[in-house]
Length: 88
Image (tube, helix red, strand yellow):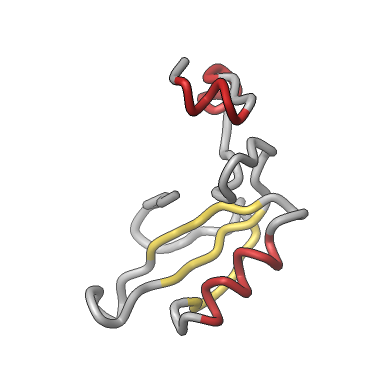
């Protein structure tokens, strides 16, 4: 366990057990995937993925939309292309 995990109250076993929300310091189980890309550095078809719990979905989606990066929000169990590529 790192000092950052300790400060956030993160249990490493919890993070390994399943998909975790990408919102900083949130360790809730994710139920949404937010697909995005940065057109300045990614090809148009590339999709990066942030995971979100129900509580932080709107916040993360707004963050991406404000910056012109958001593409689509899907339920976690929905297919998202070639394979998951989670970023924090």
